[in-house]
Image (cartoon, rainbow, N blue to C red; front, side, top):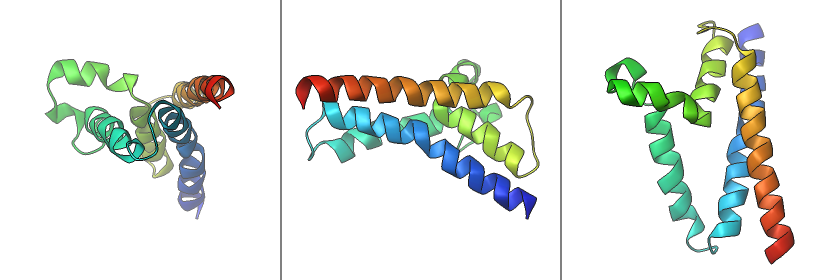
Length: 115
């Protein structure tokens, strides 16, 4: 039960940066092109952050840039939620909060300017 609750909390928290990114992309691209553009962003991000393959199977330079992606940090929180912590979690939480806030501010700014 505790792991299930932790996983639910990670899921609920983890959608924030991706929703904010989706909102920003929605302000940049017309409605018909937004789904395609989101796929062009989300799919490479998921691959490059080690969600589909273990990072150890990727080339060294890709392993080093994996922490750039918010999906990497969400993955680290999800692993901890199921009992496989990979180190301190606060930095991952802070990165996800920062990414969510940054994308949300950029989207809000564009919406104020462009309507």
